Length: 90
Image (cartoon, rainbow, N blue to C red):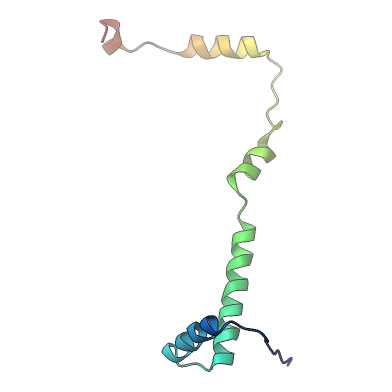
């Protein structure tokens, strides 16, 4: 098993880690290992989720249709039905 030594850690950060370790009944070393493992696990999950922009970009160009844009728009408009409620006006 490897050893790791951390130098130059800020006193405030060390204090926070120490408080966490005491509160969770761990040594400082155990707390650092716990926090590191937790961070890495979350990071993998977050990286696995694709942002909405990537999803949309992946869909870009995936729609294939032989009809022209004018014909598609015409079909959409023809498929619409006006509501009886609106026939008399607002």
